[in-house]
Image (cartoon, rainbow, N blue to C red; front, side):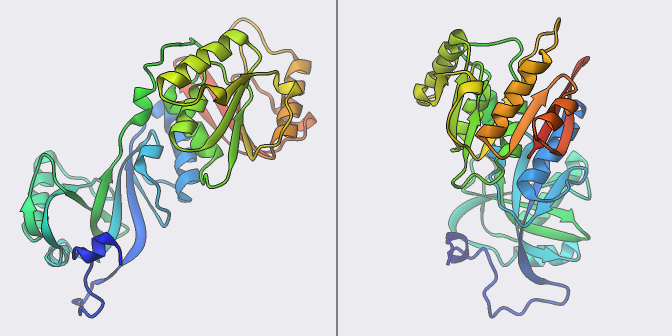
Length: 331
């Protein structure tokens, strides 16, 4: 029995539920938000993480993922109670009995949105039925409810923490480095399920991708051909409490070893294009190092991908002002 069950969160197995009610499904509802420039990236990341196509404001999935993982997820609601009407959901809320714990109730926008006043009124209706002491500032338990897929759902809620924002404060910066949001999303696309997988970033620069991957507990190594970049990456890793040895000096075209997946942010200069032979060498080396890769590029590299043996599985565009990057999943 889980801790939640032992504290009376679920109806007991012998409880007779009223007509229109049924035991909660083992699913989770996630709310998210993104800027228009990152809509494609957000959609691809959430499909990779949750195995579902996101709706306008939320996605419901059978997969349980910590909302902290994604730069786009806000909250995760465990679907523990379901009801056809709000009145029936109130009855379900009355079956939640907390043993000395304080609680707060939050309305989540999903298939149905409400004004600020409307949300607070609905929260009071549900909260009034829960057996326990309400606490608005620092509750022991947070419950959420929403209208999704033609029914009301209720359950424990977890709010995400914007961990990647802390990683913006690096001691070493680089003007063309990926943003922490894009880097974190790229890692999630590359390694949606991290158990036992090993990631490599063979052109790691100042370590933006490395920091996001390591902060999620993913086994990761980084290399760069530029000694100054390696020095900067090591300083950044140390600043956030990660081992400096995670990054080493090395030319990806000469690296040994085998990894499960690779992230390659292709070097670029706004005034020049990467020479074709150099690009081919890099893509062929990536193919040798890992069977799957996430590649970020400003240039059209489709011909070079074909020549180097990669096939594009999925892709999206990432916009920033007048610039557009392509993110490609290749195998």
